[in-house]
Length: 524
Image (cartoon, rainbow, N blue to C red):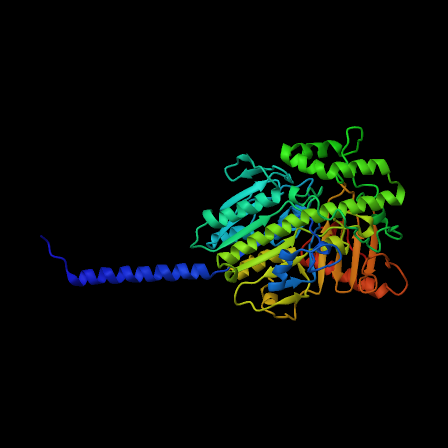
């Protein structure tokens, strides 16, 4: 029998122990890299989130993120529309650079560089569950399960990464949360950091709440915005839109006043959504809405009474839909806390844009006006980031990609146009932080008929140019006119302000390489 050299055994054992130590150190290093949970809703506006606005509803779980972390008080989008906003978030680039300018003509170029791809290449597990809305299938994700198009509130279909379509019974907000928590609990590699995107359909039109929340807010009379009956004087583009609660909000599709002998433009669409419910869901739904329907058609309100009635129904349905969202965000926070993961996880909550809750008499978004350009943004920070409270610097959704990359220790691509928010999360106040923001909306002609426009916003002023089939400028002093009711463009005494803003607008178009500058050059 051949003898074994004890020195050789010692050497092998030493290398084995050393290898185990290196492996453990690498595992610990991976575990120390912060996780990211990015929760994004659709059309959730800051007015309907109680850490921003206490007039309407309470959102305790969303507020919990802000209470334990930071609240951005000047958070904005670059293009207030669902698909384009998502593309900006993923790429860190403006719409004209990532190629997804609008929902009607574009498909997302899935081959381009994105933040999830860079995280994935750096060893992060990446997953997305819920709304995608970019027309092509996700890339850069280890796991994905997405809604086709806008998705459905009740018993929705999902497209899986095997390219199968699966039908799931239940309410969409809870299903998306269930799938996300299942991935966290059962499907991920616990030795690796992760970035999970939880993208909700809520609170998108037509605001169909979960059956357990249908009776909420029915006794609530919501207050009206001061400019609810806006006449759009001096604002041609605002006067020509088709997003008015009074004339454009559909009685059946939006407000659920379905009756066989009544008709509306979108009745068939609503009947399809209503038809997705099973018998139990429909019974719960009818139990709440049938008395409302009967009372509405019996009272038959007209004129201003009808407009006010529509507003109250809209607000109640929207608020009910927020309730499920808030509850399910709470489930995610509870899971992370129970698993001891909160200290090593960045939790982000935001929306793809803001929304009008009766301001200017509107619903929807698109305009560069404050309610749709702004978006809520709150973050619970991982251990080591001691900043708490409000962050007042102006930030945009193109900033999310570089922020997540820097936080993960991944190099930010040179072609990304956003700025990392990490210095702000550390409590710093960079002297060179942006003092103006650029915005560009493209989708016209389309639903709601909001004119194409671009503009610049500073801390006090906003200059907007509506172009294409019109040539109209608007200028607002946000300090003296926060509701943007008085267009002061061309008024005596605004010449220098206008000139300075046009120069800044041109500078931003050059900085961000927007070709619109060549097609519609800015005059003095």
